[in-house]
Image 1: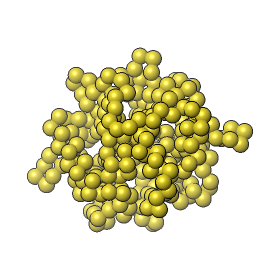
Image 2: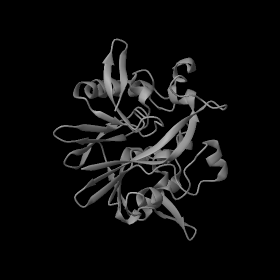
Image 3: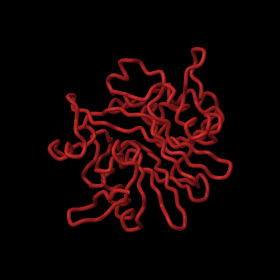
Image 4: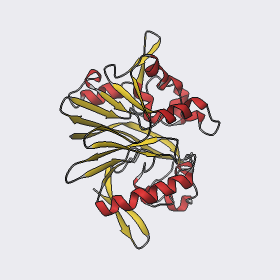
Length: 272
């Protein structure tokens, strides 16, 4: 497998929401906030190429957002980031065969659709899109706690046009590429894990979006079930440290990837 990290822009989220109960005096050392208490966030997706398959993991912030929406999140990336990003590495949107959506929050699946002739169409027209069934059910439930994170325009057109394959629970896309399921951030968040004889790479998505969040209690207030997130980190991070996994960060603006090291004060980030 050939793996490429694709940078699809930047946006900002409230620092307090990103770190939950962790005091600002601690998190601002690594993630300085602007005058609105927002920290910079990357939009880093992953391309996996193997034989005749080109698999994109997540699709970024999305095109066609209103000016107000972009201003709220201080979005920088433009509408055509998907096409431009693929073109820079010699590919076109028609070359993508598979799309794995870790979950359906707008900053992870927003680039999946585009507007043509006043209607929403798949942005990656030849790709099969893999979505967890429980995640789709939750997105459609319109739970008041997190409904603002779900925009039906990002995923319903994919279903209407028959390009979605629903999956339920842990699964394997192909040999060496499996998906771990976590439920603390949102129901059925699927984390891609790539394995070879000598290396394991985990795409941290919103379980470990930033390098500072290797620390177990550094958990987002956005998470629906933070204690569940803590249990999931307790399970995965010690294994990642012991087996020297490479963790790729979807949202960290400073580091693309890193490894976990265990210290006297707990788990910490080791640059890669």
